[in-house]
Length: 101
Image (tube, rainbow, N blue to C red; front, top):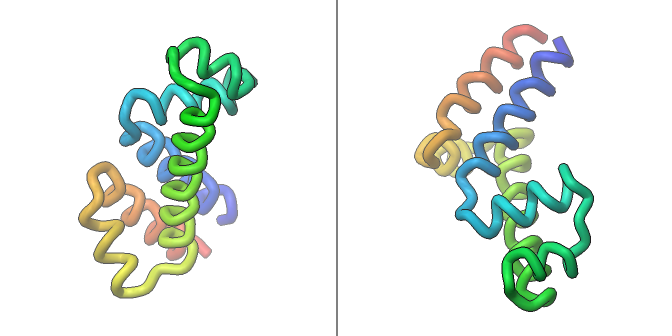
């Protein structure tokens, strides 16, 4: 039962990261999948390292908010998640995981 819950959470992360614009997606992907530094990412994107840091922090804030919405749903949060593109399926997966417990 815990496995289904974690699978639903991974699906949510994937949907959220897939919804990032090009730069944020590249920053998150290269930071955590390719283990590149902010300096290396900045060189690839031809922007300042500080801009990469800003975009990275923004992406993490967005992910954190979505994870909180997933873990601690309330009426307001559930409405926000359901209206977000790509996350309605995650809401269904979370409900399926909850019923399996």
